[in-house]
Figure 1 (cartoon, rainbow, N blue to C red):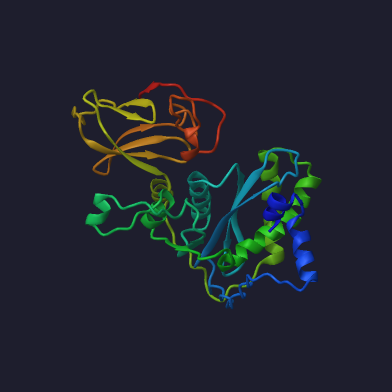
Figure 2 (cartoon, rainbow, N blue to C red):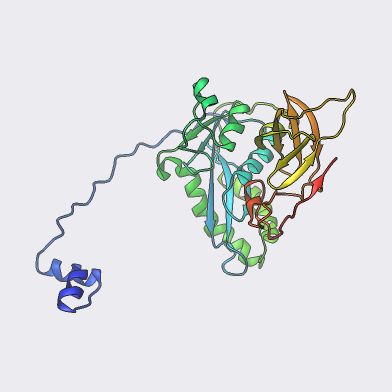
Length: 324
């Protein structure tokens, strides 16, 4: 109606003003409000490590003193314990893989992860031919990594379904923001230092007792590192080189001599920026993070493609021929 008044009568009124006039005249909106749904409170899991709720909270954590940040964290469903959290620029696959790596190495593997339907966890792409042949649904990098470790990924149907971590963000945006302000934190490094000091105090105040023994499962650091990384496939060129995101990697000579020309290999990009090549589950080459320009691989057009494989960086990466 506000649009019609302006268009036909040259009268400009706000929506709220028009609504008040109509209500005063006894004219109510024909649109009925949707009744609130009845929701049942989900019981907590019995033991620590049975389920972790994970989420990211983009917020002006530094209140204008520094960059806008996103806090990525995980809370244990049984106890309410914040088992991991760190500041980053935005939610990303790298961020959640890093979060899981730190938690899994410190505590062990949980039985399940409860998340929203962020593109980090959920994809609606069509399955590849290989996936169709083995009747496997498409997975994201994070979904694939958790699947390899035997951790069940549960996708929430609504924000209310993961209410415990949503309430945690409300608490943090009150208490943690005050701590950051008192510390005059104005960088992500200073903010992380405050968070690391605050988190144990928060857990002492809000921890709930579990009703059963912890359910964490043990896993080796090597097993965790090999699962929580980015995995791609590439074909080796005639000269035993592999081109990956604009960087040419030379596969070193081995003994006895062997050529991998035209072979299809697996490329693993680890969280620290290192790159490893595997052929039929055998490691055939490894490049440390210094040689791959730590924390990210970038396209030659200098766009920040590195966000996929690591945190955002302002650095651009030119072509380099690397060898171990």
